[in-house]
Image (cartoon, rainbow, N blue to C red):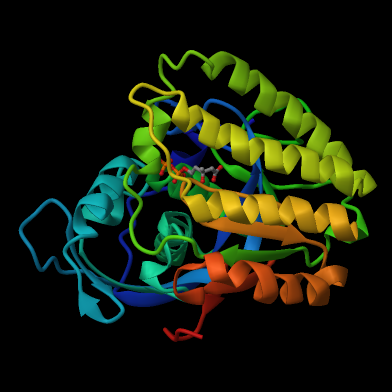
Length: 367
Ligand code: DP6
């Protein structure tokens, strides 16, 4: 059983030498949603996600032994090769939370160079892939002082650190299916880290497709962090957490037996319940746009008419993720072009699919 102490034990008084490391970490899309948390950054219910392949963050972390700034944490951030001050508070808060597990954070200077493969304006949250990539870079620096560190420990601690940056980021280290949270049916399931789903998965789910329809570009009006907070004292919170627990139990069975009707029913209900929680919190708010609803209705009509097992899910925004098996890619892309592109802002959509997880790179290059 892992505990927070698991991630302190490895550390000795060794200080890293100056070095640069580069990691790529993917985005993920939750099937059973994390919505509501307990201190500190622990999920109110277990969740499970597909790791994506094309939507990712590439981060280069350069560590030098000499501090450049007088502040407690000495670091600079470049986004798309341009100095960016707006990321500073989030990274500062992340360093503060992870310092007890990475004491070298106050020892030297860090230059963080980062970029996403998807446009910033696309409305796709980059905190999961971003925090995962940064955590992996920090782990590479820690590992340079501890060359015998096992790969399993490296990846588990990266997930642990990423969680402290943004909850869903702990599911962006490995792939193709990752669960996060204590749950009786998940081997080694933990509130502290994401774990790769380690049970048989039906072939129909291999290379499952996710086409992201960009309904609204730009920043959403209410952050996920504020949304999670509104689950405290929410009239339906307890029922929602129980429902997520049951949905996860059922979904694990479905992932094994390939029952796509069952899959669609749970995934769509999870998406709508997530937004129902937002609509029924105090204050209440709405992140779906008219185009979100038009897409949902068009998907239902298309599914009924063709029998093609496509379904939708949503994250905390207006964009729609269309999930479908690889074998119906051609028909679904034709449907998107014919009936859905009109609802996308500037006609934009991103084709993605399940992926294997993060990767260390030799050089900083945005593919
Ligand atoms: C709707 O992980 O972005 O995407 O932990 O406050 O950073 P913080 O929130 P975040 O919440 C993601 C919520 C979600 C559902 C999910 O990914 O499980």
